[in-house]
Image 1: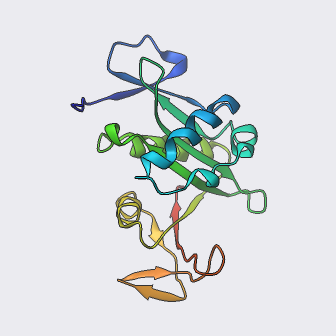
Image 2 (image 1 turned 60 degrees about the horizontal axis):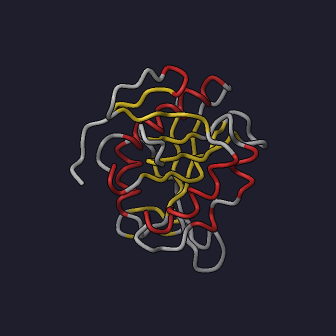
Amino acid sequence: MEKAKVTLVSAENATSPSHKLHLRRIRESDHLPIVRVVDDWWGGRHVSHLLPKLFFEHFQDISTVVENDDLELVAFLVGFVSQSKPDVAYIHFVGVNPNYRKEGIAKELYTQFFETVRAKGCTTVKLITSPANKGSIAFHERMGFKALPGDQVVEGIPVILNYDGSGNSRVSFSKEIQ
């Protein structure tokens, strides 16, 4: 499939010319379509269990979906504002269909997320990723995220050992959005 440059338009303003992508808030009904494709989007790596339905029920005012003109899922971002630290937002999971990667969609999802949570009083956005996910680490560094100190440095990246349980180390990132 040849990739075409795309422009995101909000669902509210969609007088959409063709080849536009539409950004809208996530809905509970998005859960199954997303968990059905996300493992394939990750090259067969099992990640769908990281997206329980509760995210689709309780974080609709912050999480977003991108669809094409045919209403096919193109990308999504699941995030929330911390209940313990109301000035901190957290990006839990982002996915972009492999056919639409390298088009700036993830960057736009993040930009929209920053605007949304800034309006809710957040000044910091945090997230984690696997130390093995070099593409994710590079993307977040390009987006201005800084890796937080860890227990160990692996290939120049600070890693928090056993962050998600025994053997599940993570790289923790933070970005100020004031």
